[in-house]
Length: 205
Image (cartoon, rainbow, N blue to C red; front, side):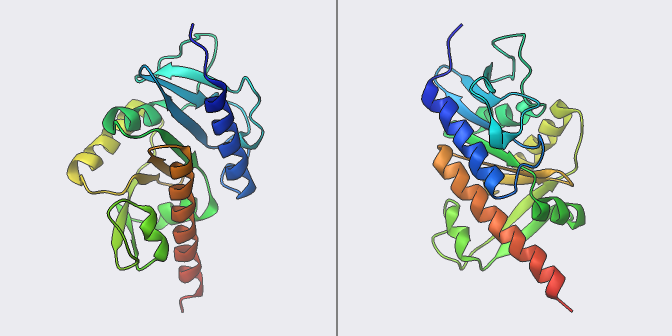
């Protein structure tokens, strides 16, 4: 069995600490992954607080989510991470968090959340200034991950220009990028904009 490179494990653990510090992975929520060479994915194991991932808290799966070590259990939503890597060959890291703004706004939204005029939209490809707008897809939650991934794929097919992220209603946010620093940047940008949207709704008469 091929081991997981130590830098990959440490990148995942560091991302978990960062997400925890910002309140995006309460309890055992969230999951973090990194693409490895040879169609492998390093992903957090199920049941661990992501702010305190132990050295053995990361495991390897193939692009279909099958564990290399059958005695280990990956995060329940491993299939959604693998769906990202299968669809987007350049995706090198994927993050999933459960912040309050993402959870609340996704419960209130329809099929998407529009974000426009924010400076941080520049964190996304093809948007060089704040004079831009995106629609962040929102998909209904489903405990059947295969069925949920099929709906995610349908959303990608319907809008090839959709941003590299989506919300699961009442659940949380997924983002991805070429590498872990890029994924963290996009997650932070989206979380900031969602927090602004939530605060705007609170202040609006």
